Amino acid sequence: MKHKLTIASALTATLILGGCTKLDETVYSEVIADNFKPTANDVPSIIAPVYTNLRAQTAGWQGWFDVEEESADEIVTPVRPNGWYDGGTYQRMHRHTWTPTEGQPNGLWSRCFTGINTANRVIYQIELGPDPHHYR
Image (tube, rainbow, N blue to C red):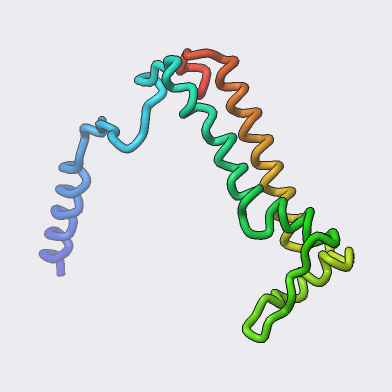
């Protein structure tokens, strides 16, 4: 028993003391702030996240179109034998009896809120200028 304990202790000490001591790494998967010097050519990449959010908001399912048109007399989404009832969400939108947890207005509000936050963040980053130490 003493022999097994000595071997286990020696093995544990070897693993702990012989582990990796050089913890520096070269990062290839992301841009490090110290290495990023933005130029005028980078502006489209910096502001792109603001517009990316608009895609789902305007053209996405249950987005702006559904909120505006489904709740008006512009369109009606009929229930089909193979689906489209979707828990009655389209009927409630058309009758103006939707609830606070309804997908269309909730999703639209969430995407708008996200877009405004993203726009404010991008404006803040642009106003700070190219000094990478401001982004920490």
